[in-house]
Length: 201
Image 1 (spheres, helix red, strand yellow):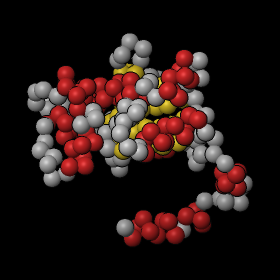
Image 2 (cartoon, helix red, strand yellow):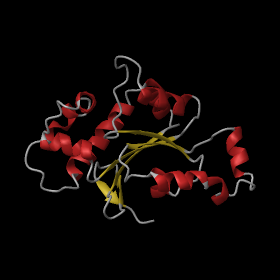
Image 3 (cartoon, helix red, strand yellow):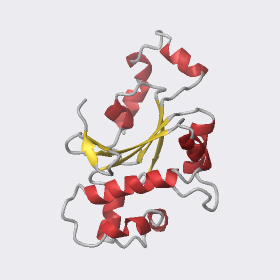
Image 4 (cartoon, helix red, strand yellow):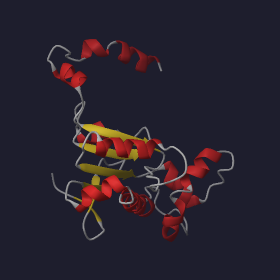
């Protein structure tokens, strides 16, 4: 924690606040995309994309899950999606799953989560639609089958949001599915044929 605190204390000295970039950011934000990904500390959207401050609006939670529209109670996810579309006017949404995901691993291995009731209830949102790939042993610790299907399912959940559906219908919104490999740094993109592939830069 000391190293984190020291870097926070020296942040103003390490960044050029005189350039005007941060003054412009203080006047408002105009991100290009909403980036939905896992809370996992190894997945850093700005590092993966090279985004500068103000370029991406982030939504992070365990397992990069998008609750279906109209769920019971308040939802930070629903509020973030609504704000990104209705107020910020983002035209692209990325759902990025990743290898070695603890949330997907818990679902695949059928872990007893009774000691973590909040986690268990949260993962219940994803479990039913992942059923086809949850049977069997964990053959690959990267869990590509589970994590990639989860991305596809969360993109489908996004389409249940009226604000997203309206924009998709009029061509004002594009959805993207990504799978990030923690150990290699490779980003695979979901193609129209439903397969994830690495595309040349």
